[in-house]
Length: 355
Image 1 (cartoon, rainbow, N blue to C red):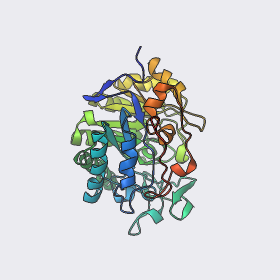
Image 2 (image 1 turned 180 degrees about the vertical axis):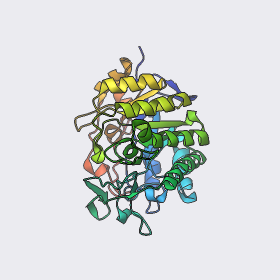
Image 3 (image 1 turned 90 degrees about the horizontal axis):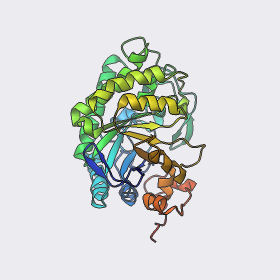
C-alpha cells in the first residue's frame, strides 16, 4: 500500500515523501517585492516537505494583488529568491515557485504609478481586499486588451525563466481561487465574446496559453497548474464549471506537465474525471470546514485519491509536519499572528517536534 511517507519521482525530481506544503500568502516581502530573511527562514524550516510551493508571486507589477507580496520580474527579486532556494536545497528540500496574477483582486493603493487592477472584463468583485490601510472595497478593474492579454502571457513565461534562474525546481501556475486565470475561466467575471471568452473553450484559452508559454520556456516537466473548479472564493460564480475545465485539461494533458494541483471544493466526482483526463501526477489540497486538514487526510493517498497531498495551515504551525504526521502528533494549532506580517512582524517560531 502506498502511503504519504513513501518517496516518489516527480517528473524526474526525487521527493522524500508525498506531502506538499501548499502555497500560502505571507505578506513578508519588501515594498518592491523582494524576498526577506524571514522568508528564507520560513521556507527552510519546512524543507522536510516532499515539495514546497511558495506563496503567490507576481509576474509583473500590475499583477500585485496584496501589499508586501513577492515578485519574479526584477533582478533584485530574483536575487532574493535565490537566497531562499539555496537555503531550502541545502536543507534537502524541493521547491516550486507559484506564479500568480491577482487580476481584479487588488486595489490601486497597492499598485504604483496610478495603475488600477486589470481583468478579462470590467466587472468588480463584490467584496473587500486586504491593503496596508485596512480592508477596502474592490474597484472596477480595467478590461485587458487583446495585446495586453498576450503581453501578460509573455510575462508569465519570463517570470518562469526568472524562477529557474533563481534556483527553483519548477513553477506552479496559479489558476485557482478567484485570481486572474480563474477570472478568465468563470462566466461571471469573463463577459468577453472574442477569442478569450463566450464559450467554454474560449474561456479556457488564457489558462491554456499561459501553461503552453511557460512550458515552452522552462520545459513541461518543470511546469504545473493549480485549479479550483466551482470555488466561490473571491467573488467567483461558475454554477456549471465542468465543461470549461474539461476543455482546459484536455488541452494541457498532452504537454506532460509535472502535476495538476486541485483545491478540493467538495465535488469529488468532477475532480476524479479531470484527473483521469489529465493522466499525470495529481496533487490534492483537501477541503475542510474552515479548519485545517489533519492526519485523517493521509488516507487519501492510501486510497489512491491523490498522488501527493497538500497541507496549508497545519504547515504554518508545524514546520516539521511530515515528522509529526508520521508520529501521530502532537500538533501546534495555528495562531492568528502567524498568518500575516511585513518582514518579521508577527513572525512565530513554532517549536519543532525534536525540540
